[in-house]
Image (cartoon, rainbow, N blue to C red; front, side, top):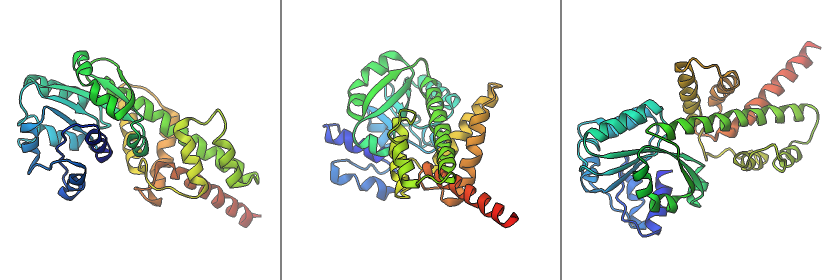
Length: 288
């Protein structure tokens, strides 16, 4: 996601410096016009606006709060757009720590897959200071179709958990529906194609069905990341004393599907449910 975002910014005239734990990953963007500083601290010292897209809360805290991290090295008035899917509490902590140093931190969660980012069509869900949100609109306009300010720090990541609950549970519902149709003798390819044309399947899931026709589960949104987000959603719900039974059930299937490959697309839960249906059918035949 980060590399695609950087390429859009570079293509639209922004000066972009890139840091990655694996330096070779950052260096692939040199041909597009990016620079690669020697360290994260060096990047932080020179950047006016910092965008980050990281895997989890631990990575965000390490990048921002370590002694050689961003907050220890960036100048006051630096604008920070933290775009990872993390706990809202972590977003609020980061905003507080940044404010103590005179920096301005927005949590800017991304809704959309990597191909959608390549097209500049993602949706951004933002929390933090409204005047900072307005100041960085040129960046948002470059990488997103639409963007929303939802409230104070943590509001963007809170909204992202809501969105991904719908994304994950919706995918599980589709996987179960496909298994039901196939067990009734419907042609798999035709069923998946027809479902993709119905009003009940969301735009986010349409492409998943069409790729599943070809058994293509190459990662647009890896299963391991959906699994991580399910955990965040359920842990947040627990903190709020809130029950999410459908989400809990979807997480259990998602977790079992990791055996099929954590870096496969999260839509591979379709295969997981098909496999369960086939196993149950085989057991029934043996019993008869």
